[in-house]
Image (cartoon, rainbow, N blue to C red; front, side):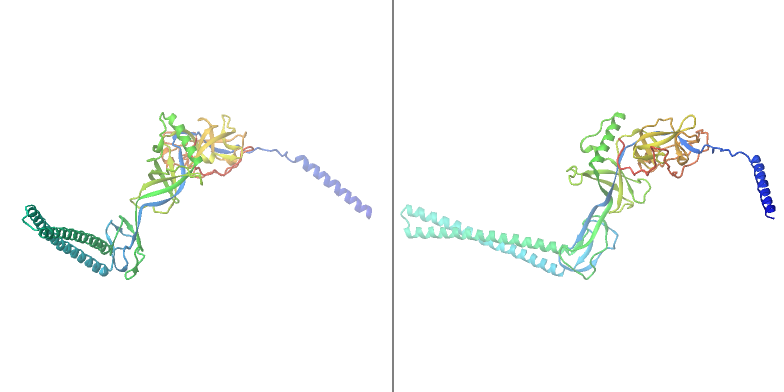
Length: 472
């Protein structure tokens, strides 16, 4: 029985091996089919005149603001304004109880009148004394003539001399009294002027034109001389204060010097290099730089040694009150002249510690990696200083599928840029095909930047920092 089982097992193994051999003879050979070349979007760099600029952050302030302060002590009787409304210079804002100051003013006016009357009395007395001097002088002369003729006694002459001397002394005393009375009048008039001022100060007036804040004191509150009652703010003009580092300043000046020879103009010197220059401003939530103003002040002390920065100020018209004091803003200062520049979308760049790179497509539709020098990035564009030519087909979409040396299927697009919009922080890369422009592929807008995967060494992708200085 054991032999029978052994025979059956052996037969099963032989049968299984035969079936396996037959199956192997009919199996198809496994072949590797490479994937088709990936599709990418390419575009030629855009050549345009771009204005170098300097960009910094700062804070806004109103061109004028003045505190409304009490000038006398007293209780507030009336408030003549509503918070936030426009007021004009010298418009009455508060009334402080005038009773005490009116009484003091009346007393001062009375003192002035008394001083004037005293002067009149003493002046009349002086006139009388002056007449007495004239009479005594004539009498002395007559006695002297008589004495020379031996027609008068020496006693009469001495009496006349004493009378003349006394008359002169009395006149001088009277004239001194007039001077003292005039001095008293001056003092009384000064007291009257001060009393008049204090009485006038019971009506608190607006120091400047502008919008007034809420009141810090209410009706019936006691205020002291110097207390701040409210503030008037004139924000028809808004200042933006900011500082630039010495390095940024030197780089910007170098960019302007490069722009000048190209445009056959000479850079300005002195304060003219800055004062009156066009400046653009952007708030934190703005797209681009919608506000245009001008530079109106440069710190005359130069670079601050402690911080290594230069202080500047720009002014902006604010008739619509879109700018508020105290805002955190970004200011952009363009150079006077534009520079011929080669631009590509910033999304086409990859970076690593060895520099910046782009992927291009050659005539054989093979990917070629090129190292470039980037001067500035702005509004999604990168200004290329070297490494690219006008006829290089740059991959602007599909970087994650492209590899250096590999073939791709390129779809060409046409880039366009608005230099003025770019300066104002707009003008994002646009890949729509312009009208009447023939391209092998259908135009479409690149609305988002692809994820940048770096090609084989040396390039790897990294986020591009925001520009803060101009291209050189």
